[in-house]
Length: 363
Image 1 (spheres, helix red, strand yellow):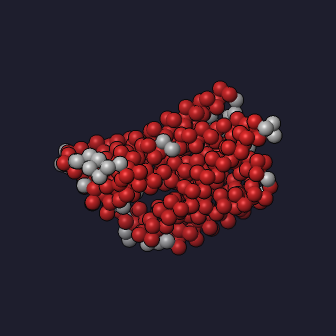
Image 2 (cartoon, rainbow, N blue to C red):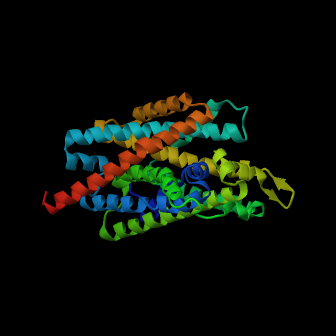
């Protein structure tokens, strides 16, 4: 079986955790927390650390098993299969919505006349290639793409500095701390998306004590890297657009890209940024494609290329079901807030608690 190193796990985890979050995060958190929403971004991402450590604790107790397999061991066969069906349904549906977001972003920004199905087809072909090549190739792809994403974000934010208005940030905490709580609730699902993928990729991780310590370090680094970058993305948009306009602009980062000017000669470089960010979208979709096929294999013992094609068809069907931008964004938010967040947070916490209880009881 393929294995990925702790370093590959860190870069892959960071790439999956980041995914498309830097595009809508400013609108989401500003809508919930106002001008102070940016403060809640990093603490909300930090929720992934305790949950990630719980998953690693389960790995050390049940090596070479993913969380679905452990659920059948701990909760029993039928309860485990019910959890597996929920896992497949949620991750498969969400992955299809993310594929739809590829078309939504490119059609809105730089290619409005291109048929939307071409974006779906191009995205799913890249995903199929990465899935067929294996998890190790997927991890290497993430090692290449993640630094490019970080550089593109840094350039976009750095070149936007001349346009900031410091007064947009003041007064800080004028509405108390409750806006921070509501902003954090809206960002917390991003960390749970990471945990859903983490729970499936366990079978490909090393499980010696030394390597588990390295994996723990990788979780901290991934969460703080992505959380800090997303916090800066929100902060920059609030400083440039103000909290009201930031809430209105779903893809405000793309608007920042259009505003960028280099020495008054180069402008509208958002198309260059979008080329790099396509890699981020593909990584996130591939991660949820993997979770779907891992779930099918674990719960129903369905594996092989024909089932991969079946998942492709499902993803394409879901993407075509939400062609309009507003309905797509609303559906992604609904799945995040009302399916991924409660399901993952309750499942992993309960599984970890029961696994420790069984270990203590000598089960």
